[in-house]
Structure formats: C-alpha cells, structure tokens
Amino acid sequence: MSSHADHPTVIVGAGPAGLTAALCLARYRHRVIVVDSPGAPRNSASAGVHGHIGMDGVTPAEFRARAWRELSRYTTVERLEDEAEGVSSAPDGGFRVALGSGGTVQAGTVLLATGVVDVHPADVDGFAECWGRSVIHCPFCLGEENAGGSWATVADNAELAGMSAVAFRAWSEDTIAICPETMPGLETARATARSGGGDVVTGTVRRLRHREGALHGIELADGRVLERQTLVWTPRQRQQPVVQRVADELKLTVDEAGFVAVDASQSTGVPGLYAAGDLTSRWKQSVTASTAAGAAAADAIHMAALLAAVHH
Ligand SMILES: Cc1cc2nc3c(=O)[nH]c(=O)nc-3n(C[C@H](O)[C@H](O)[C@H](O)COP(=O)(O)OP(=O)(O)OC[C@H]3O[C@@H](n4cnc5c(N)ncnc54)[C@H](O)[C@@H]3O)c2cc1C
Image 1 (cartoon, protein in one colour):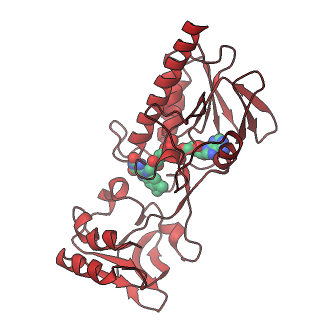
Image 2 (cartoon, rainbow, N blue to C red):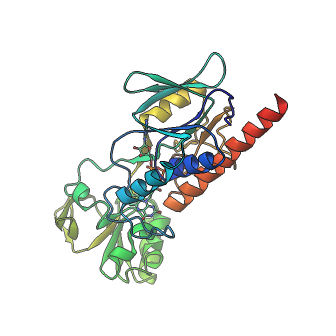
Image 3 (cartoon, helix red, strand yellow):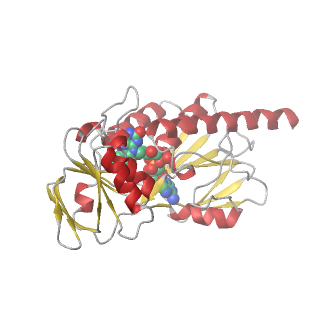
C-alpha cells in the first residue's frame, strides 16, 4: 500500500532515520525507494556508533551494512545509489524526485532524511585529522572514549563557557573554555567556571597539535599553546543543498537556524512530505533520536495511506 496508490514512498537519505523508516514501511508492506548518495556518512570519522542499544561501538559503516542486509529481505524496498537533486509537485499528484544521474522518480510520498553537514572551521590546521577522535562535537557520542584527560571547549556564549567545567565533569575534572575576547558576559562566565573548578581563556584557535588525530596541544592565534587532550567543538551546521531547493520549491517552513519544521508525526505541513532526523533539529541529533523519528514518520505515512484508502 502507498499513500498515493500507484507510486511508492521515496526516502531521500539512508542514515539511521531513512533506514528505520524504510524498515518500518516495508513491514507495513509499502513500496519504498531509498535514494542514498554514495558519499561518506556524517559520523564516518568516528570509530564507533555509541549509545544505541544493541549497536554500541559498531562502526558507522557496519551499522549501515547491517541495515541494508536486513532491508534486503523485503522485496518492496528498492535501493537507488544516487543523489536526489530536487523534489517538485507532480501534475497528477504526489512528487517528482530529480536525480543527479539525470532521471526522475515518481513518488506518492517523500521522506527527507538527509541529515546535516558539519562545517569545519576553514582556518584551523589539524581540525579534520582530530575530528571524531579527540575533537568531539558531543560528549554523549565520544566522551567515554576521551574520558580522564584534560579537556577544552570552544564556546561563544557565556552560559556554556561558565557551565563547561561542571557539564563535562563526568568525563574530565580539568576543563577550560576558550572564548572570544569580545564575548558578552565574559567576567561572569569566568567566575562561574572557576567556582566549578574550571576556567575561561580568551583567544582564537589556529592550530591543533596532534599525533595521528590524538590531540596534545591547542595553539592560539597569539602563539600560546594550551596542553589539552580533548577539544569539544560543535561546528556550525548547514543543510544538504537538496533541502534548500525543496524549501524554495515547495515552500517548506524552516526555523531561524535553518532546520526543517515538522510536527509530532514528522509532517512538514506540505501534504505528503515528511522529514526526519538531524535536518529537523539542532538539539535532538543522535542515532537513537533519528531512528525514533524515522519510525514515527513511517507510522504517519502508513496512517495517511489508510485514511486515503478509506476516503477513496
Ligand atoms: C563524528 C560524529 C560522531 C557521532 N557519533 C555518534 C554516536 O556515537 N552516537 C550517536 O547517537 N550519534 C552520533 N553522531 C550523530 C549521528 O551520526 C547523527 O545524529 C545521525 O547519523 C543522524 O541520522 P540521520 O539519518 O538524520 O542523518 P545521517 O546519518 O547524516 O544520514 C543522512 C544520509 O543522507 C544522505 N544524503 C544527503 N543528501 C542526500 C541527497 N541529496 N540525496 C541522497 N542522499 C543524501 C547522506 O549521504 C547520508 O547517508 C555522531 C556525529 C558525528 C559528526
């Protein structure tokens, strides 16, 4: 069954959100096409996916390989290794998904599950080598693997800077925050950090000294070097280009930070168009949150198909 009787659901992106939605829809016996670009996944720099029960420590590549092995048992699921370039309304209802290879796919329903792109700072030497190892975006994901050493965090707001020593104490008893000199609330942040056993240092990170991705020093623009083994740095994120195109074409609502707005059933508000996973929120980015969102989207797509069949 599909919400648009003749056309399948097209899922754009085969990360935890898209793959889970594909599995759930397959079990509802929907026809599904999963379009996945062959590029490296967002978490590919990490040695293991952590905090997802049954999979803790499994490599990102193995996580996906297992998912595809499971999906291959369902004859209603098709995998298309391609880049979705855009989604537009089809004249006879549903959508057309334009592919990078040149073709298009007709869809009754579309689920966007393209994740986000972490924008690495362009002018910090060594960032890419340490990313996902000793430069971490999230202690939940990689704190355990970095526990025990001295930490730093790059913060541009006083609240985060002040709280960092306490917030990261589960993993390190020695955390400093690196902040811009011009940050409002700097002195209050410093006082809060010190009362929690940490400190605030002002400056701009220029270079990361490391051995094969294992950080040992943070060089600031003025030449100072902070001896640290772990750096928590959550870089800016941007949407995949296809999302911006879909937003323009189908008038998707995005919030002020650029995330796609969805309701509790992962609907974007455009009938038949759903979104799930990292692209919908800065604050619910994890494998478990994305799989849950993918499952919720599948439920909603199935329910919409049932209602459409009843009212037909
Ligand atoms: C270094 C690092 C380590 C992490 N470690 C953990 C961890 O240990 N535990 C945890 O819970 N979370 C971790 N995360 C976060 C986790 O990876 C994400 O929250 C999760 O992968 C989001 O799932 P998703 O399905 O929304 O997107 P993604 O996993 O990013 O998948 C999106 C997919 O869509 C594809 N895609 C994008 N654009 C297109 C297009 N136009 N056409 C077709 N396909 C497209 C991408 O190639 C990708 O395969 C980590 C993140 C990073 C950066």
